Length: 255
Length: 261
Image (cartoon, rainbow over all chains, first blue to last red; front, side, top):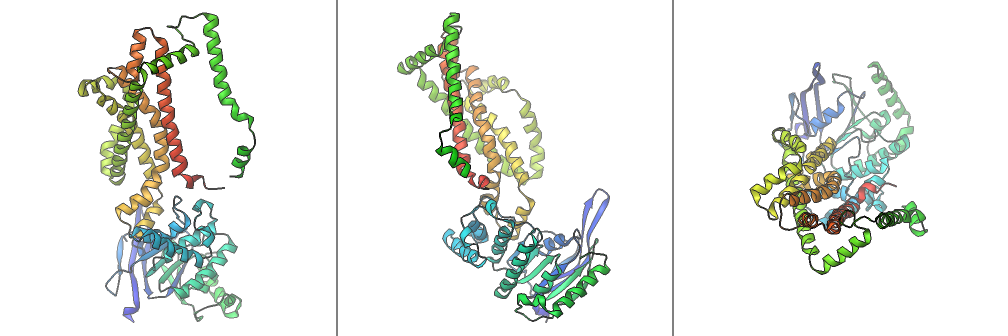
C-alpha cells in the first residue's frame, strides 16, 4: 500500500513572523494523500487551510516538517484552483484555459483546440472569445477549474474553489465537479466549508481545527462511486452530515 | 456599448461645442488684435500666424525644423521607454537593486530639467544627441516609477498561479508581467509623450542649430513673433499627435479592461 501514497505531509509546521513575534499558522500537520482519491478538508475559516494548500502545492516552504513522496518523485503537474478565479483579464476565456499549455510551448492552435474541448465540457463553449471581465463569478470559477484540469494534473489542489459563489451556483458546480471526478486521474485535495459538498465529493474528509491548526479527525465516506446527485436525499447522507456537523460543533464551530 | 451606438447614430449637438469654442476663441483673438491695433511683433493675429505658416512652409524654413524636433522627441521617447522597461524588469525582480537605484529615481524627480540641459549640451555637443538624451531622461523616470507600481499591483495570487504552472521567466513576462503593467505603462506614456516635447524644446532653447526651439530663438531675435507662434503650434501638434497615438494604442491593446458591460 505504501506505493499508493502520492504525497505525505510529515509533521508540517508553518510560522510567519509578525509584529508580536511568531504567528503559528500550522501546528504539526500530518496527512497522507493516496493516489486518485478525493480528500476534503473541512474546518473554520482563518485556520491556515490556504497555507496548507500552498505548502502542498509547492508554493511555500514549511518552517518545520517535510513533504514526502514515496514514489521518489514529486507529483507533476500540480494544479491549483484558488479561491478567486485568478483568470488573466487580458486573455480571452479560451486563452485562459489554454494558458498552461501555451506556457509550456504548445502551438497556439493545438492549445486553443484543447481549451475549446474543455469549454465544451464545462458548458461555456459560447464564451470562448469573451473577456473574463464579462463572465459571472460562477463562470469564471468554472474556467479556472478547466484551466487546472487541462494540465492533466497528478495532484489537484482546490482552495475553497466555490467559496465566493452564491448557493445555487455553488451547488451546480459541485455537481459538475462530481462528474469530472470520474473522468480524471488526479488525486484531489479540496478545502471546503460545506459539509454536503464534502460528503458528496470526498472519499475521505479531514476535520481541521482552528489556529494553530491540526487535523483533528479523519472520516471515511462510505458511499460507492460514481455517486449520483440523488445521494443527497438519502437517509445515510443526512446521517453522515449530522455526524460531521456534531463533530465540528464540538470544536465550537457553527455549521 | 449600447450607449455609444445611440450617441453615434443620433446627431449630437454637444459634440460641436469644443471646436466651436476654439473657433470663437480665435475670433476673439483676431478681433482684439485688430481693434486694439497691436503691432504684430507683440501679438500677431491668428490670420497673420496662418499666413506666416504658409510662407514658412513654402520657403522650406519650417518643415526641416519640425522634422528635427519630431525625430528628437520620438527617438527620446522610444529610447526612454525601452530603458525604463528593461530597468523596471530588473528592479522589480531584485529588491536589492531597487533599494540601490530608488534614491536616484527620487532625486531625479527633483532635478529641474532646464537646469541640466546646458550640462548635457556641454557633454554631447549642440547636435541632436543631447536633445534625445534629455527627452529620454524626461520619459525614463516617470515611466520607471509607473512600471514599478504596475509590478507591485500584479496580484500575488497570479504569481502563485504561474509558479504552480511551472512557468519560465519568458512565459511570465509575456503572459503575466507585460500585459499586467501595460495599463500603467500606457498611462505613463500618455503623459511622457507631452513631457518629451518639453524636453526637446528645453534642449533646443539652450543651444541648438536646428529644431523648433531653435526656430523660436530665431523668430524672437528677428521680432518675427508670428514665426514663434507657428513654431509653438507645431510643438503642440507634435505633442497632441503623440498623445493621440498613445490613446489609440490604449484603445487597441486594453480592450479587455473596458470589456465589462
